[in-house]
Length: 447
Image 1 (cartoon, one colour):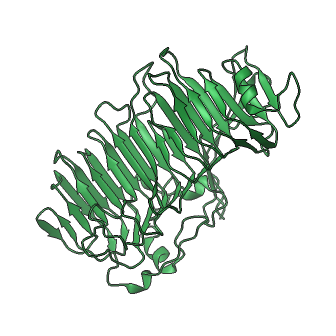
Image 2 (tube, rainbow, N blue to C red; image 1 turned 135 degrees about the vertical axis):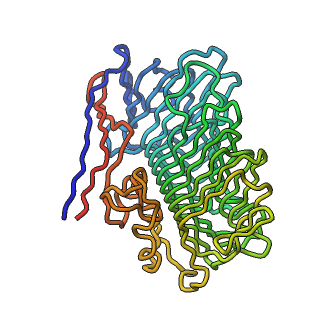
Image 3 (cartoon, rainbow, N blue to C red; image 1 turned 90 degrees about the vertical axis):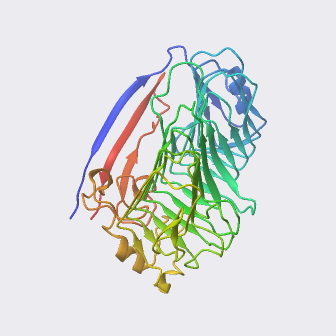
């Protein structure tokens, strides 16, 4: 039976009436350009740089201006053979908006300067081969549908959606969101960092907010996080004295060979207010952690953390140990301090089942292909309204469950839920001094 749940909004939005489109293509001559760097240098605040297929040499320096770098058509891509440099000064004021779409970036993306000129940066559908370092006060960076091969250091972000973070480094690369300081202009539209439907392969997700951060909530949903090489860092490292964190419908898998007393899969500390872990697949290739190592590690320094562990699937054998007490074999835990409150409900543990130790993971969708897992986890997630699947059935455990299903963001995945859920602008560049914004929510074409 085919079900369609459809909501679509179209809007024509006018840009700055003084904004100009600048065109870049190989061999471009005045008034056009043959260099992205030259076009950006010549652009005024609010201009768009429209780039044809090709490789373009030289560093691109963005100096206190709102700028957009797009392909001329949606099928184009282009290569920046150099660094992207964000200049900052002390003038403050309204945040500048920088959008870079469909680029292959061979160099680094970094800032220069000190005191805050605010920027909001969108990286969309790009491939980045260098380090990204935008960890400075008053820089907000959102990233969508892009692939990254080295570490990323950010000050703040509202959305990290549909990306691939992949590393083969034994020292582990990191996506690190730290401090989230925003000291100029108005407050942000949201206080929540959403990390949805990304693939992390040997890359750590680390968040460390402070009491003065503009962000106070973390929502980590429907990601595929896989450790395939031995390292001592944990997959998820979360801190923040005022932070509420919801971790749901992820696959968190580790080879478990590293002896890591700080937690192979999750480390949390510094007084998280609420840590809710629900509907996740938490897997280990060997079915257990090494001696002296734990899957999870909690260090709530203020001893005020409320922990909820509900409707997760485990194949780990190490007992759960909280402070001086023990809860029978659910998962390997270590607590430096006992949380203020603990709720543990409806978790599935197969520690006596060895057949799941060699499960397979599909690199395209992140969905484990072991039929034993799928049969156990379907319609086994927490059955509350905000978790129910798009077909209005009880939530599945794992990244294909919930309204934020992996299928919403990866249309080439092998799952059955082919859903579209897009919240970022799709720009048609032929509209003079304007853009056509298309937003779709929950388009379900299940058969």
